[in-house]
Length: 144
Image (cartoon, rainbow, N blue to C red; front, side):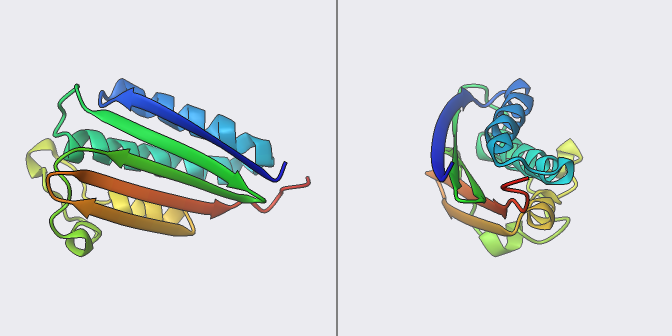
């Protein structure tokens, strides 16, 4: 398999975080990843979707999150987008322990976790229009 892609849209409710994580892992399994690689993908997807729910839509259940996953050779890419409030200062938001929702006892480690588990993390955002996070990981065991 050289190239494949899928797209999923779901509401910004916390129950869908686990759903998105499972779908992304099932899609990535085409590449025959190691258990560790699959766990890395699940964790990063969880953080990106949770950020969209909690920060993008501020826990409003009526927002729509789009997750696109693509396989190109042995590279897995997931793009998580929301049309929420956006991020005013991306570089500040990417700093460990920074959170806009301290009253929710958030750790402020979402982007740091994504960066620890994926090879590339790109964030683009416009205040009032939403945020897109692109996560990329090369799967090493493509022909195992």
